[in-house]
Image 1 (cartoon, helix red, strand yellow):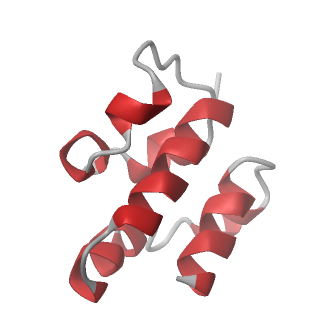
Image 2 (cartoon, helix red, strand yellow; image 1 turned 90 degrees about the vertical axis):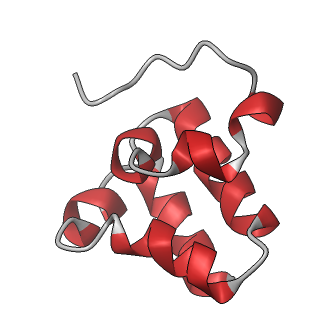
Length: 79
C-alpha cells in the first residue's frame, strides 16, 4: 500500500523534525500530505523548505500522480 498510517494529530506532526526524512512517505497519505504542507507553511527559511523539496528529488512524477502528493508539490512551488 502507498498509504501511511499517521496516528499523531496534524498539529503535533507539523513540526519540522517529524517531517524530515519522511516527506516522500507522508506526501502519499491524506493526513501526511497535510502535515507536510503545514510544515512547508511554517518553515522559517528557504533552506528548510528546500530540504523538504530535496527529499522528493527523483520522485516528482510519482508524487504528482498521487492525489495527495500533488498538493505537496503545489505547496512547494507556491511557497
